[in-house]
Length: 271
Image (cartoon, helix red, strand yellow):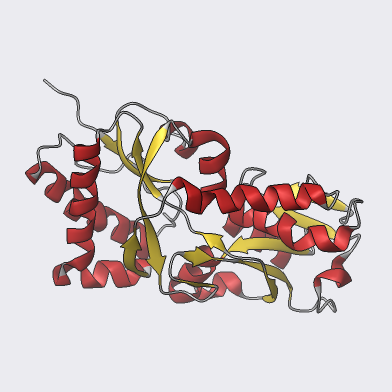
């Protein structure tokens, strides 16, 4: 008996309406995939660490951050499609990050936060670190810019750190911000947006690297069917997902280009 292929949607899986919508989204997509001959799991995998699953040989569908994709996953996974979200802080597949501070902090520009405490969700995050670094590099003059950096473990954690006074500034994924604004606005209480970072391609859907071209085309077709089906409109609206687009490795290379640009400015690491 063939073991079912796994799927995860851990990037945006906050409890409540979003998690329920992710389950319903996977129910629709898994049914479509089965009709195309894929032996897929009935449920999303929420037991495995999201980072570890990206390279597993039994992965059929997941979503990764763009920076880990260009730095670690290229050649190990295949791009399926990039979602298009309805939230502010982006257009089409392009997404920025929101740089946030406590609503009572007097700082109005990034320069005002020199020497202050920053929070990031993860050192390999595009929205939390890479785009943040791209914003700070022109100001840093080749020297450490912040007084300290705390790793929060997640974008919601970074928001909490700023709200609770554990950090003065953070860079937050605009889809996370949009989902909270839509479904849990109380989680944004006490914080405000200071700036918007440069934009880059958003978090791609991926599948395992051994997927053949014909299989990849079938996965893309199944995804397109789910997104286009009016029966899924409420699910997609809950997730803020209004479409998908096919991007290439070259499109995501721009995220690594931002790293090189920061290095050229003498700011290779967020500090």
